[in-house]
Length: 409
Image 1 (cartoon, rainbow, N blue to C red):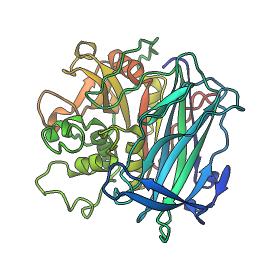
Image 2 (cartoon, helix red, strand yellow; image 1 turned 90 degrees about the vertical axis):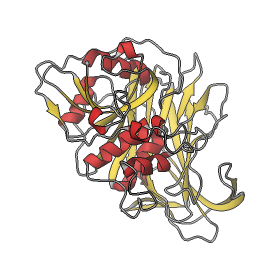
Image 3 (cartoon, one colour; image 1 turned 180 degrees about the horizontal axis):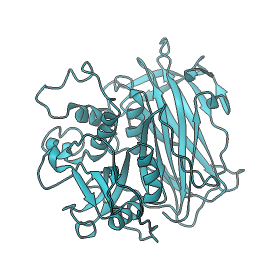
């Protein structure tokens, strides 16, 4: 992508900074220690009605990335046992003095028994607005500084302890339009796409299982448009499986044995955003992945050269793309927003992908495809500003960063 992008994360004991309201930090991360108040929350997506919840909160230090930005996407890795849950918020400022309101970017729990995981539509002010999991500036507005706030909740008499091991955000400028799951319309916005050749590099392909979302195409209509729209959880499940991670047999017990790739269905259920009515919430997908002993976050990369650094480090990526069928040879479909998995590069520098939306046949055998490097890079950078999910075990190092002045991982 052109312009600016940077990423900042607080991991483990780094969460000791900031403002603590009833929270503390130990070797496991940020924890709810003492509730400081009670909140009544009416969950609009369940029949539970109004419930009281005890709460505590953590407010991050202010982050000034050193460049203007118009987009913010958060990430978090957490566990929410029992009836506990999280609310993730952000606020932004153009000068570090005058702040916007706090915008809610997710209400989330490991189990829908606590709250129905959801984004919160209808949030806007004179400077910007929330589009599902992304805070976007209005035309002509740029910001310089942001903060995150995490609300940790549980029942008033509960002893459940929600724990956060990572809180992060990626900010970028210019503010690219959003894309997400198949079938969601978004205007195209041309950019000066970065050019990377990949020449002179040896071929490399990571061992990532191939899952097709099309195997679930007519199933589970209650989860958005059903399996045909599950590009995001299918890609997330593929990367988790490549690390030998994912739901246990106990977690899959409620699914019929004949259901193909049951981990995909489990992921779709758990990342489903009840307000968005789909499984393409970026932040929810990485939060789900982190349940399985990995670190996972959303960021944006500047080129396929940067993506190749991850592949060389053994880390496959989930990438958000948008294109018309004539713009990506071999795809065979149009999409205003789609997620696929980058698993390698061939000797010519073209991109080896596990594309869960292959429309040739509803078969896992049709998922692996090699896309032209220039075409795929354009579909990715123009489509989402280079957005990716990074999912890796904590003992697998991230690649060394080539641009420390504006680190985007």
